[in-house]
Length: 232
Image (cartoon, rainbow, N blue to C red; front, side, top):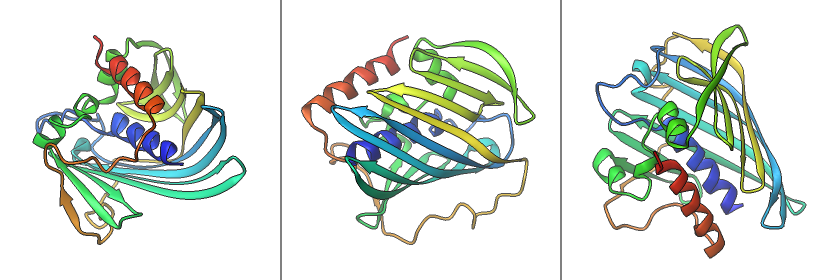
């Protein structure tokens, strides 16, 4: 279960975290509210897993302020578990909610760039390009014109930089996301983007990460994935 939470959180960072440049428009749409259905299944290190859930992404100011919230139900070796992940980008800050500890971990741009996740601070196309991906076509999806971008592991349908569908094959898992409700250029209020009323801890360089503990095998797999992200 910890591994599922880790990869889910990394996926959020990969697709949601930009260069944190105040002048950069992360999307070509001013604001949006998009709901998704998520599914994941496969065999991870001999453990059969199956996960389904729903997520919601809201953003304004061309993506400079964004909230991603996901709730999942997992069945691992016949045991059912529920989890929730919430990440918020607010200009130069990234907030990660820890519902188990009832706390919020804050990474400002400086601490994020000095953390082990600095190479994830890219927008979607930059991430795909750094993984050796290419644009492979175009398709109309849910009435929106999309670019299709692919690597060996990931296939994305992007509308003006916004993911409307994705299929990822990694570490024995197949993970899919598909938009179920799309609202573009709508009003998104500060209340809509509000985080839980938990204490906020600012993460400093050298402090232990709030990420779940990993086995040596998982650490090696993480290092391999990070190499893929950083290779040009």
